[in-house]
Image (cartoon, rainbow over all chains, first blue to last red; front, side, top):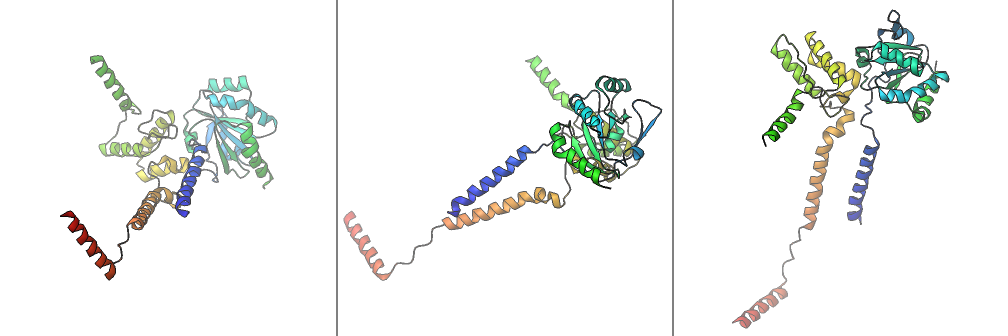
Length: 176
Length: 154
């Protein structure tokens, strides 16, 4: 009996393994930055080149989302209305305009609305490299101590928010 | 035919031109190190291409980073660390041997060993056992049979 059960069992195990493999998204590369303090930077703000966006000052003291976007990014456009909705709900969102032109970035904000408390302007994409960004949009959840607690790759959907980001933000809000 | 060959040559030439910027190196050793580095680092956008092969924007930026760091006198290990700290082990085409990658590194050998043991055990089971030696009565009967058979033949 074992003679037949053993290969069958091995086959079933292999099927399960491959099945799990199929559900994984190879584009979601785990970030080594999760659990570490957010990389610090100073960049000009998108709306005003004279005013600096100082990450050490902005990205701490409150739970926030740090959303990397660009006006040329199609998935960002898809995500944008939901960011607007989150901002209306009182979620703090900071932006990083990635490899964009100032005019295009400002036009985007003007036309589609501004969900961001402040947007840093990263024309060269150097800061994004420090954050391990490899595709836009990407969103980091940052806690009150300025530590990255989660990285979301791709546009945030209402489902993502309900299942992962929302509960995490609620939990972090309750932490000292 | 001539056109076919020309087209084929053009198609073959395409990948060779991908991801190559003109870079100036003060000495050829740096250039070799640069080539080596960008060949063993993975482009995160295309995933199955190295930084050297990829035309993606990010790959270009990362090649710039590698180039700048090389010129600044950074060691290869420092440059690799720079990228691993930001993008994780995934940027390495050759992942490091550590607890989470044991299965990856040693799994195939374990599977090979397991398979070998299985084949050996199955092979042993299938080999027929040698028949027990004949008893005296059986031997006499055999001889008789052979004799009878022999006499029938002639």
